[in-house]
Image (cartoon, rainbow, N blue to C red; front, side, top):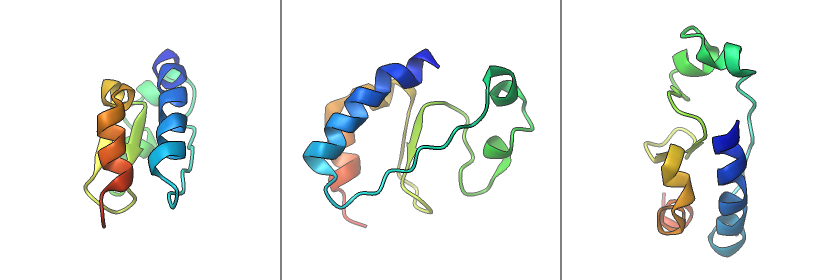
Length: 84
C-alpha cells in the first residue's frame, strides 16, 4: 500500500540509527480485499490485533506504532531504544 511504501525508508533509517539489536520481521497481511475483510486473521489474532497498516509492534509487548506515527523519527527512536 502507499502508506507502507512511504513508511518503509523512514523505518529502515531508524533501524540503522537506533535498532542495532532489533530484529524486524515484515509480514504481508494480504491484498487490499483480504486486508479489508473484518475476519482477516491479523485483525483477530490476540498477539497482533492489527487495525492499521502499516504497524510496527514490539512482539508480545504493548508498544506499537501505527500509520502516520511511523513517519516520525522521534517516535521510532523511542520505539527502538526503549528498554524491555
